[in-house]
Image 1 (cartoon, rainbow over the protein chains, first blue to last red):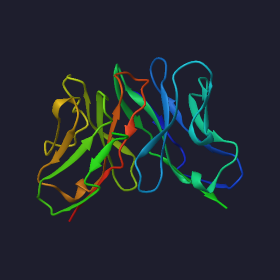
Image 2: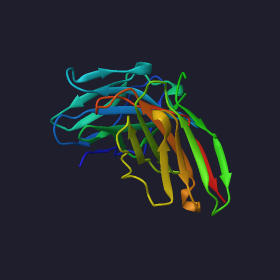
Image 3: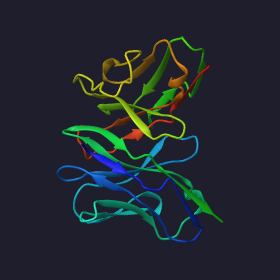
Image 4: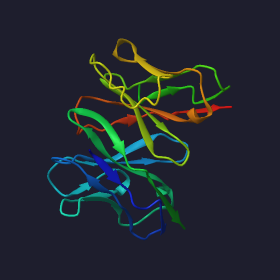
Length: 114
Length: 115
């Protein structure tokens, strides 16, 4: 079965420092991987996705993610964190077959302090 | 519309009552999803509609939950005889086409509180 895991419940970063939010996956076949962000009291917003091609994917708000097949990881990164990046981040993978519904990780709360 | 719209944004109901949650997807989007997000929990898939195909109801937690999508657009999630454990944020999403590589766009959610 397709699944993703986010090993950290919370990540704390100082503003201006690089940030990493971790995600590992377990899929059969070629993986399609997604990152979403949820700001307080808001719905989820799409950040970026990996389909094929370059292992480094660039997305919204200066975020990027690196696909690593040997480590089955898709970590979210940003070179310089902003306080406004504080939110809940979800990694996701499609359920399987030709269906599009996503299976989400449990989420990682990112806290960026000034 | 510009985005996925959900109504109401908040709903407080008494235990045992029925509730209806509405979702207006992005115009032209053929796929529509319902998820549930409980406090401190991740997102739980409930149901998936794709065009005129039979919906994937595999995530519905009990027969008290049902959903329909009229005319391939607006969807209503109905919870009958609500229980306190139904309290959660119910999120609706839509996407433009069938396929595992298509991102979904989410609404703001309906926060349901059962008292």
